[in-house]
Image 1 (spheres, rainbow, N blue to C red):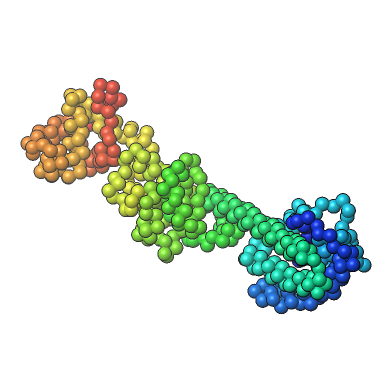
Image 2: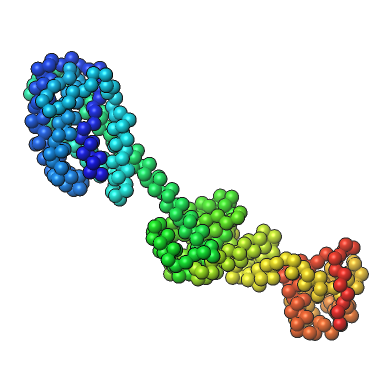
Length: 439
């Protein structure tokens, strides 16, 4: 930053209106007086920078170089309103040089000053305040000398316009550089945060690499975390997530947006998640150690698929639009591999193929109710909306088909998985259930 500030004092000043004819003797006197008064001006600026002590310190340490560059700036200020002034030790402006408010090369330099201000963690307002303090004190000096020399009013006006146009231009350039650096830095942080989330969800994560990545983005590493799966096309969920802020990490995984929710004391409870995620439509996983996060993604993906298929009981979920996987672990386990579940259903429900096609669905429904209510016929009749005698009749049919298997604990467990984990197989004409009953 030091070299940028040193060079800043030597920028070209410009005319914002047509040059005003200024006699050579007045131009030389004005430039000479400005150069002579510069040390006092630098001292005044230094004393006035109480809100930016780092800039005051810069002026104090680099006083001689600042005086040299400031002297060149004052000569150019005079040149902008009249004939070129020639003073020993100060270069003249080239005759063919263009004199815009802030040429591209110098604009880049002031942009760099703004970038450095952000990189060093300083507020942009402090830099702009220093510019304004210097501009006002410089104008106080310029105007007092102009009045003492009795310069024409048009020349004084041109001096003011040139000085403050230059300050406006360098202020805009520094602000532009500051914002650009801020934007690029934010984009880089988001990239690093995404990489950290992807690392935590991969099997290649280790504590050392995670710690380094987390330090880069300023994310305290928790001992446990919960995963949340969201549809990135769901605008409401994305708005709710944005409200959560940088507490969480996010990354894309297939068609899902995976959120890593750190289980810190103020965030770990279910109620804390509900209060912060209200309105979000997502699948929330249980709290697990960080090394189990990769496996947790697979579990949540299964739960999200089941939710889309309508196989999770939403009335057991807390919060609007949220489904907590810990309420549905049994369904997730059973439906993890649909092919295995289908094979189990076809096997344990094979005895129903011996019944007439028209009655198979009713018998399967009755068998599921029998398992659910542990044989309570009144409860079964209420659930099935039939008379208890009808329940007795159907149970008789089922016992003829299944025999003593209905009293076998292992068989009842398998029947429960097959019937209570979702819809049973198709019992129509095209039924794939062809396996004969087993004794």
